[in-house]
Length: 123
Image (cartoon, rainbow, N blue to C red; front, side, top):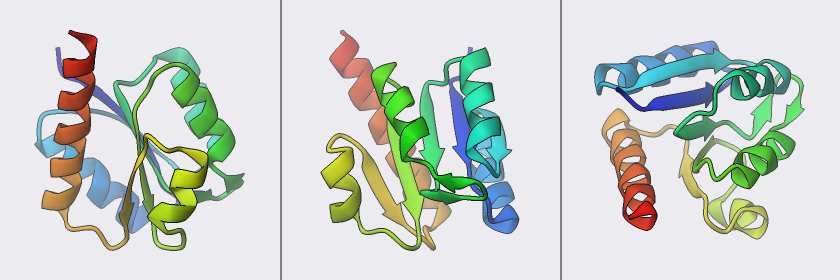
């Protein structure tokens, strides 16, 4: 069974590009979600294996959703053009932050690294 990745991104060109990249690598994609409320609903329906989150979505800052994901041990990759990794680490020390624009190969490398790290931790 392929691993499920939740994508929350409000810039539609970036969102569809990100979803295509992840899907072409063999992952199941949930999204893209332009807002926190729809991403939260998707998360409540089915827990993802990983989440790729833009920090600023249509309906606000994604940190409340990220806290709920982290509480359920869902690893997070923040994908932002406005926030530095230092800012994010202050709130989510375990999360990976990639700055936009992020080449597809770098995103896939981060996804695979995070999932491998989680699998190793679960052993």
